[in-house]
Image (cartoon, rainbow over all chains, first blue to last red; front, side, top):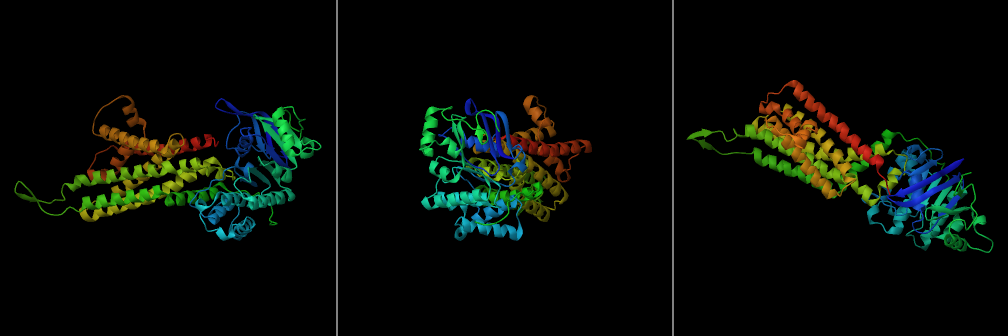
Length: 254
Length: 275
């Protein structure tokens, strides 16, 4: 079954093309790294999947449902590129509300909040207001809310942004743990080493189109690192690497 | 890492609405504009208190006149002005109620949950409106009490005017919220103030027999009857002779505008692109 699907999707902002006829299908249980230079369309792809923006052409599906249907976001966790929360809420209030919105309540909600607060190292600061937290701590709060209820699908946009080295390692552990539990991950990132460690598939976007996609071991040639492959593909443009069906392809989705 | 089962539960829209409306109420309460509305309500109360506590003696052509007598006519004007002031204050809170989460990006994480945009928009409106009506309703209730105790005004017109105030606040809040998605908040505020004044002037001029045409007449004829409804609601105080059908049609138009403005807000939020 397909978790996320972009079918021949184009997105224009005014006259500027953010995505052009992109086909992407992410099967359930895969961990896909979404790579590309700034402005390649990574964040736009995630926003399309969340229903934040509408496609100019083509279709978007999350587990077979259009993003306009709220049920498409059941069991979905999201860490945005720049997490923003109501600044006057405390971390615990914020998690309680997010937990309520995914159907948790009572003791189950309190237990789940405690689990996530411990997991993300925020338990001692649970009563602090989000507005007073550092960027790294805000990123931890973003992870805590995204992981509430152990969602089946995780959309992570630059998940290690703003984290210190320890935070980066923690984030990697959370992502790997989710992957081990069979969750579907779509991780947009510039940090290629992190993608290499946490994802089994990659999609490289360039100028709004898929330049390469497929299992990590096939996109990265023998003797190359992911960084080498990325540079080769982005500098070479579309067609520099064979496109695979399955995870993502410029034309035709498996 | 925990071993909790994956969550894929159906969350009823009513539950999501209650949670988000409560959050919107607290958000408005904690904001500076929430304090401003509370200040507006207190200012209105102070104004009413000063105006209703007329004392002393008044001689007219050598004869003693009860100094409170002119207040029989001024009381409804005072109550009406305070109502409209509080309606404008509700627009003040609403102009921030949706624009702020959009501007700071916090809307994204709410809408990443299984929550429809319709529910989110209605919850934001309800939360901010609840705060405005709590402050305004408290001020109007106290004003009605002072008018009753000090000048013998009956409660029934005050109750009707209070209901008109609530409907007017809902209209102004919904329109202010919708407008705030497209223009800066300060522009929204000025637009709301200007719009309320124009409508009230048009309504009052029409009721007192003035004739005019163009967009001003259209505003009076089809716009939300904030002024007309308020004056009719207070007709028990000002002995206004009005046909029941006319009053009914005005009140019906007011209620229709509550629905129309709310629908406009929902439509605006549904069309909003979060880039």
